[in-house]
Length: 133
Image (tube, rainbow, N blue to C red; front, side, top):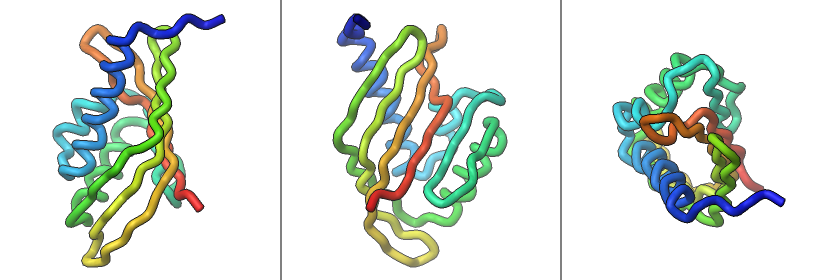
């Protein structure tokens, strides 16, 4: 049986997950730089995109999204947090309101965010979002 993670570790993971959504909502690449690990092992799958591997490609995707978006708002629901050793994951439903290239839309995605714990705190190493039905 796997022991339950310490409540403070779960709270740390919730906080870094929220920083990710705050950076996304604020269209702030400098905060994304802090949230993500700068390494070749990171991966990101945006809905409808091919997988992006390595921080350079992932960062370029965020920069592209941020340059084309006027508004991104998230309502993150149904969080499920798992911590196993130095890795943690958050699965959730993202309720998104966006204005991109002048077009407003509302939709939901299912997302999985994977983090690794380092000496300087948790860093995201994977984000996978797929549009829900």
